[in-house]
Every structure is written in structure tokens, then in C-alpha cells.
Length: 205
Image (cartoon, rainbow, N blue to C red; front, side, top):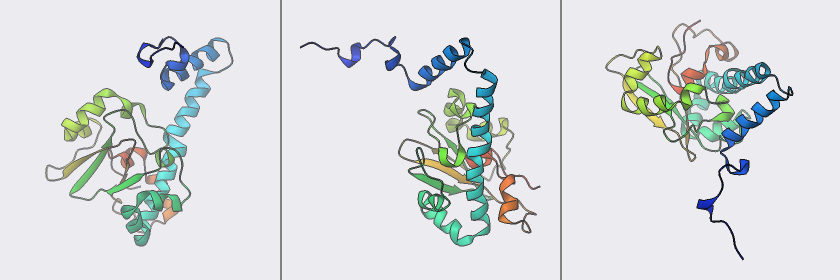
């Protein structure tokens, strides 16, 4: 009986291509045949990348800001506390939450690929998957954050959190001043995806 050794497999075979390449090839084929509108696909990706997913995370953050007991549970066991709000599923099996303060700032990266807590942040943005971000934010986080519009004081300690298939990180950003009168529901729209990755702060309304 003969067989093909895995190392000798034919990578031209679609079944052996990475999932991202197979998806791209399928989208191109469907587009060429007029079965898919690229603009519609882009709109759907944007919806899940910037709206649907991050909205879940924003609800988690807003609850932590207004409920001290929930905040303690969230920082102790992020996965369980997030599941309390119904946000579970693939890529969210083990989420660790870290808190940003006036003196400590956390920023998330995945140096190996693009591991990301989908249940609370949706799809990872393009810049998160970019090799330049993945390499540089580890070496020079302060400079990279400044280039992305976030200037931190020199006395703020920056910690880079490297996500992996075992652990995915979520940042609990600082609550902005002047929002003490806002309700949990009113705080949700203020929380951005970038603030929960740690490349931005939440701005006061």
C-alpha cells in the first residue's frame, strides 16, 4: 500500500491551502461569476469588525465600570464573567481581562498570528494582523501607540500582552472623567474596540 507523505503533499490542491487563502479564492470565484457583490461583502465584514462584536465588549466594560462586584469577577475570571452576559463561543474559551489605570497601560498583540477574543471584539482589524504591528509593538510599544494617536506620559508603565490559542486578552480601559452621571447603557456607546485592545483610550462624551 502506498501513500503520500504529508511533507510531500501538493499545495496547489485547494484542500491543502490555508483557510484564509481558500476563502479569498472562493470570494474571487463567486465575484467573477456575478454571484457576490464585493461591496456587500466588505460592508458585512465592517459590520462584524467594528460594530456587532465590539458592542459585546463595550457592554462588558460598561457593566464593570458601574458594578464593582462584576468588575472584581471580571478581573478574577474573565471567561466566566463574560459568559454571565451571554458572550461565549469559539475564540472565547479563555479570556483574561487586564485593567488600564493612570499609571499602567496594557496593549494586546498576537505575535504569532492573529488570536483575538471574537465573542467580545468581533473580527480582528486589518492592522492587528499586520506583521509590522505584531513585531514593532513588542519592541517599541510607546512609539507604536503614539503613531496610532495615543501619547502616554513617560511615567506610565506599558505592558504588552501576547494573545495565543491558549489565552486571549481583553483590556478594561479607564473610565473617562466626567461620566460619573452616566448609566451603564449610556456608557456603552463610548467604548471602542481600539480601547479594548489598548491602542486608544475611551474619550469622554
